[in-house]
Amino acid sequence: MIVFSPGVVKLFGEHAVVYGKPAIAAAINRGVRVRCVRSDRTSIRAGKAHVDLEYDADRGSARAMGAERFLSYALASLKTAERAFGPLKASFEIEGDFPPGVGAATSAATSVGVIKAYAACAGADVGKEELAKLGHAVELEVQGAASPMDAAVSALGGVLRITPYPFSYKRLRPVGRLALAVLPRRGLTKDIVADVRALKTRRKSVDSVIDAIGAVVSEAEQCVEAGDLECLGELMHINNWLLGALGVVDDDVISLLKHLRPFIYGGKISGAGRGGVVVLLPRRPEVEEVLSGLGIPAYAVEVDELGARVL
Ligand code: MEV
Image (cartoon, rainbow, N blue to C red; front, side, top):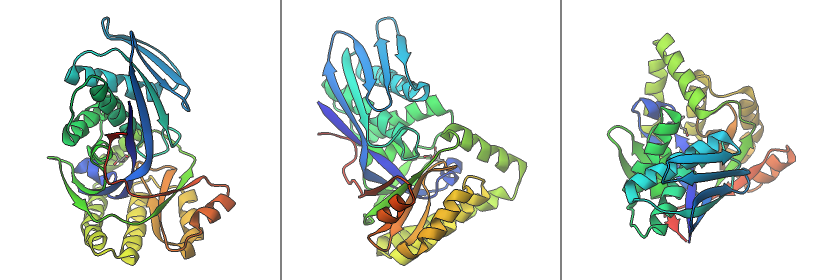
């Protein structure tokens, strides 16, 4: 049995969503595949991340080798699924389309994928909204602070406008093809979110930046619904400058966006920032080619409307 859980691209509103502002994010057709087979012991193996985890549900103990950060998501997902669906001995194999930690919500897709695969392997039915909630619980446990956005969009699929607290969502019109550029990542989501919080505590005027991001999200919703790519691109640039004011957009992103200007409607960081994924709205088809010419890993992606599912 194999589950696919989509990665998530943040189109508008990351960081501000942590403080209650709405955000718009899209599930994409690249993400994580989790294979589950019942077995006499519980283990998780992740090919590309070179990690290996054995979980003894009877003793509640785990033995692990490999990327510690990834393993903490995997283990927290197993324990969350065990609480929700009862004990299960099974081996899980995880394969991701992106390297972990690039900012395409690989951690949320992994959590959502493992929980969905656990439920399916245990013969339990898990609704998309319950899956979103369980995935968010894992993010909270591992990261300390996390909005429900990434887990919800991976579980539910589509382009969603998220209201974080209390959680609700609205499905928006699919946007067309997106291009992703992956820059070297400096820092973990958890630490970057903490830095923004510290800045917000130190400087009162940061509240106005957060409010302005919220206003961009509201305006962007109209542009998504109208299919107005010029408007979306312009608002992506504005959102990116506002994220710059929060200290999460480095010079390499600014230079890249300047270089790509003739080829895109707009672009911005996607996620916590400090490198990682830059999401681009292509105006011309050769964006990925230009990125490859610059030696920057690039992916063309489409919106995944279905969300996490058994294949
Ligand atoms: C991370 O993918 C997005 C942030 O807004 C954090 C969160 O929503 O939990 C930076």
